[in-house]
Amino acid sequence: MKIITDQRCAGYSCEGHPERPARITDALEFLRGQNELPVVWAAPTGVDDATILRAHSARHLARLNEPEDFDADTPFHENIITFARASVAAALDALQAARAGENVFSLMRPPGHHATRDRAMGFCYLNNIAIAVLEAQATGAKRVAVFDFDVHHGNGTEAILLDRPGCAFFSIHQFPCFPGTGAANVGTNCFNYPVAPGVPRESYHATLVRALGDLKNFRPDLVAVSAGFDAYARDPLADGTLLAEDFHWLGGELRALNTPLFSLLEGGYSRDLPELIFAYLKGVDGQ
Ligand SMILES: [Zn+2]
Image (cartoon, rainbow, N blue to C red; front, side, top):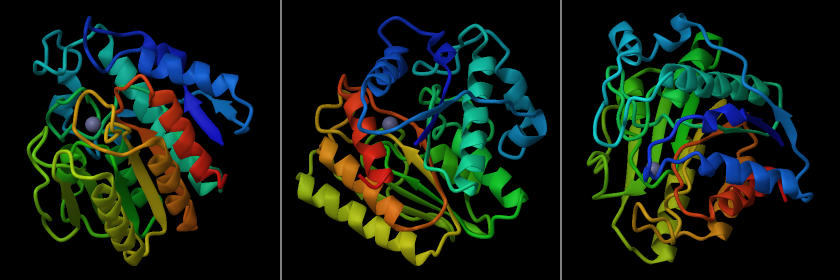
């Protein structure tokens, strides 16, 4: 398993904010300390503006330098653009690794799936996964799928990829919940699987099975995963009911597609996040 990470992504914070540096530092400590899953560590390289500007407006990219909060959830941080670009770079490196046949995970922050073309929101500044999908399409991918199992709807990814030929978006999320979208399918290629708050674990699982079936029927040649671990039963931000073994199972199901696959960390705010990531990665690794 290749894990792309850079401890420097822990270098910004806001007192009391759930999207905190310990999400990464605790996961790093856990993954470095285990010996069940062999890990090849890599640091993110870089990204040029043109690659980012496939998904975002020039105005948005410039706005990330302006020292003013984006909304109550999404503060301005000194050098946030540098942190956001490193997270994008890790996503692009993960894409390359997937194409080279590697199992790969990007363990970075900030997350990205709420960022739209013109707006930072929901702890997200640049849409890592959408930028990687557009790069994949620009470099030969014919059928790219995004599978987003974060408990929140990936509204930014949906908005950026909406009705684009050759790609599809599958999102399983709690509804109603932040950001308020994702109640139904949108356009020709965005498929939403809303789950009511607090549904029994079996129903959440059944919805994931349905989404995985539709993902498979799309016959992707590349799968990009927005891996959020906040549908976990003890996550403080939502009312999901999944357990670590469900994330392990999800990893195994995605592996079984037998298609180049890369996963990026999105949400996940419980103290058990390291164990949840580990369970998922073992599944992706075939353990
Ligand atoms: Zn989330």
